[in-house]
Amino acid sequence: MLEVTGEKQGLITMVYDYGNGGHRPAFINIQHEFKGIIRASFQSEMTDNRCLDVILLRGYQTQFKSLEDRLLSEKGVESVELKTL
Image 1 (spheres, rainbow, N blue to C red):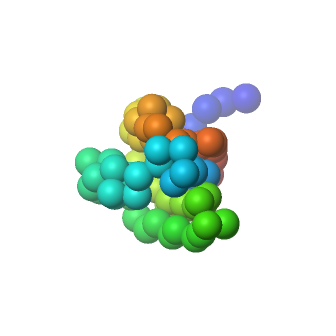
Image 2 (cartoon, rainbow, N blue to C red):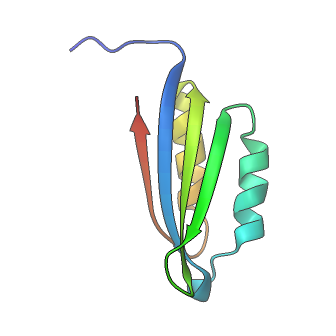
Image 3 (cartoon, rainbow, N blue to C red):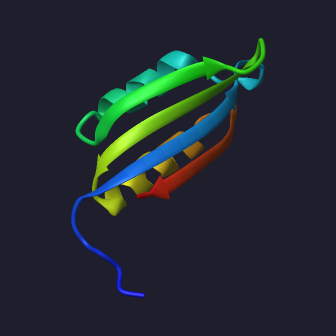
């Protein structure tokens, strides 16, 4: 299959646990670092301690991967899933 290069759309879903060290302001700071590719984000509390973030992206695959890796490095993160559209 031929890979299309250039700018793409992307979606990251992330689940993190406040009770296990997850810290919302840290994630906000990361989003500010990547504001050039983040088009929108949504956060929903799943339980008292667990949250789901959905982040819509526009940019290059390498940028998406950098953001994914940065989020995965944070304490309390249970999962990060990147989908390129």
